[in-house]
Image 1: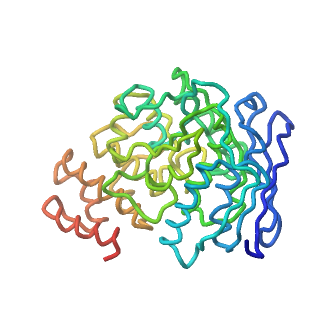
Image 2: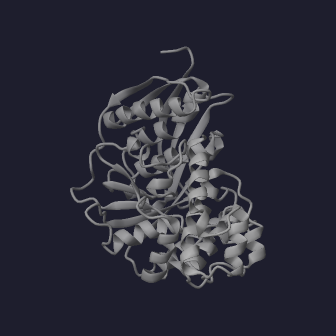
Length: 390
């Protein structure tokens, strides 16, 4: 063990103002100790696992400890399977970002698996109310996920991921939209508040582990924790905080982490949702607008999602307050290779469903620097360069 160590210890479960809070103290962080907090409504407290189990706290702090080159000591119980997985996950992040993340050691006071609360345990799904989450949940709910299907029993909406903790009004509005999507499905919505973003980790790297931390608090009652994919298999991006390679490494013997939906891209998901559910009318995809509880209709993601519908010749749903115009398409700010990949894949569908003289199509082609289907090979080569860095 090194001289620099982060010690994790439980404060149990406390209830105040209708919320049950799971607190873990993280001692040894720079510059100050930190109280890691996860809260759920008191009525859902029976769904929580053993408060002395530190699986979730370990996931939440792992990349921070690797960045600070601190070993971790958990003063509580930890899953042996999780310890095995996080050892591999450390190796992956160290290979991906050796300048940022160093290999550390993890020590647990007691290695043991959580005891399931019952024999039959269904699945809990991450649910922001966006395209990926809605597609994954409803595809499984409609029994259209093939052999790898999971029974949705709960949808987890987390305050503190994309909506700031000090905006409870925004979170309540987002929860109302989520409930509208879930209405009639029989799937319960579980609200959670968490302060993991205050650890100031690189969010693009850590968000998958933060989601896993939230899931693990429910591992006694749910056997599978399911997260909808962002990219299809042919367009996976590395390094990235949530992938089908890394997410399963946060599993325990009691709860398997599932990364679902990579066999579809975003436009195909939108088409499926529009044809099979009412979710399109209440989707919430925006994170750049002034109000993260609704879509602004002006940011890159809002315009891109409207383009997903347009590309398949579907009407733009009322969830978006603006019209899709060539001017808006031309205004898209492409900030990273992931956004560029999304738009390249979207263009493939648009060129099938719209005539060559369509003004929105022309605006999209111009924005991406392409002039039509004859340049597919050039687009593929450019995409390879963006992804592989060659």
